Image 1 (cartoon, rainbow, N blue to C red):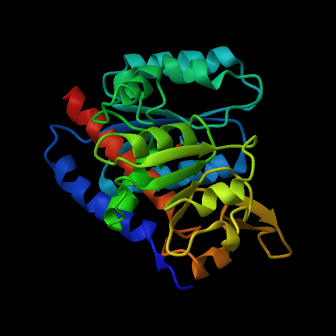
Image 2: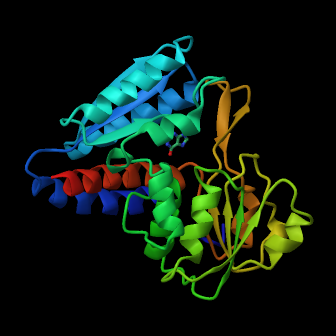
Image 3: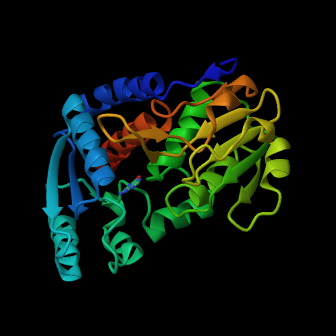
Length: 286
Ligand code: GUN
């Protein structure tokens, strides 16, 4: 690969090292509550990684498992209980919820000061108002931190965000365009015409669409920075029965100037930023 590798493990470790000092200065260690509803295997893997990160940093974590066929009201009452519990500093409800449960309504039920995912309307609203000092969505904030760490200059540059999701694409676009980052941002999505031509104009491509190897080498301007947010399970004949791929074809590494790998790119950064939000929420509460 000719491109510089933007290593999310190394960047995430630097974020965590800086957090350790802030945690030591707190009156009591932060406490994160993670709610997981149902049996989605990928969600269980992610939640396990979040619990391990808490353990590494001395953050207390409580995991609340709710059955796939539980009543929606059980999720509502769990969140309300955690909101009222002054011993809990951060609340995260792992997405996706089982079919028929209203994820946005659950998100907006979380006390905004404990919303370590940064998905509450109040926290996203602050971001739209130009205030990025609060609790920001972890994956997009992690991408911004990686770009800064890799010394990628965004000012006046053309950025294309592929995907317009509530969790990544939309907040990512806001963060790239905010004052101080100053990129010129285009949001591409399933109805975008000639995505390849659009991407070829970009200095920075953030792929967050959930389609294996979609971004091909001939979509990328030589020297561009490419951040791969995709995590796609592709079935194979291995012992595990699958392997993970990104949204970016590996051969893009021959064209791009810098590329974040999957795995080992954005994934560890999302977790590092969740830890960062948990510490920030605790600091604001204490
Ligand atoms: N599912 C995939 N990414 C995320 C995330 O950042 N937060 C939550 N709560 N669920 C997710």
